[in-house]
Amino acid sequence: MLVIIAIIGILASLLLPAIAAAKVHAQKTQARVQISDLVNDIQKYDSDYSRMPISTNAQAAAVNGQFTYGGIFQTPNNTWPQTPLPANYYPSNNEVIAILMDITNTTVTPANANHQKNPQQTLYLNAKMSGWDPSQGGKPKPGVGNDLIYRDPWGNPYVITLDLNDDNSCKDPFYSLSAVSKENNSTGYNGLVNPSDSTGNSDDFRFHGNAMVWSAGPDGKIDPGNPANSGVNKDNILSWQ
Image (cartoon, rainbow, N blue to C red; front, side, top):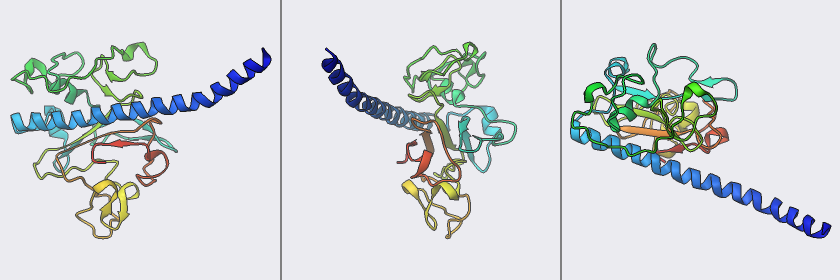
């Protein structure tokens, strides 16, 4: 009996890591699908309305034709972002989700009150509602919570950067950093480029497109001082990857 128990214990110790790895792989695949769907739905909205799915307040707060709906992430030394960017207005992605899902619940966000940003009442995004209520505390659940924030399979908000001036260029506050995206002078990782600095030393790396969506991955962490392909940044899941 003891021998059998020992064998079962050995088999379990061998299987558990494989099961855990398979689960993470499945979650990564799910995140990639959700990110791809988000980008496609944003572009469908833009095609229909000739504008991005963004609130009036966010449009007014945009800097240089860019706006990022982000979140708070852990870094090795602190959190990102440490202060709101742009100043005084830094919402999470619930405004975009309310518009794409044609949700008019003004107690959460007034972004799409009376269908003002989606007058055709088109359901662009068909995301799972998690039912998670931030007032109840605990770890956020994947999917769209009662706060209308769309979270990845690990419970962290998707980050969405939108091009608002139709120059087909997106500058995400995190991936624009030279320390994160510089690979070889102005050439960045995963196809990003720095159009303003041939040395790539300035924080101006951009994506050629009108939308960037990304997840902080299984660990939910990012590092603004580390390259995109290493450390805690390595497992991030990017729409432009």
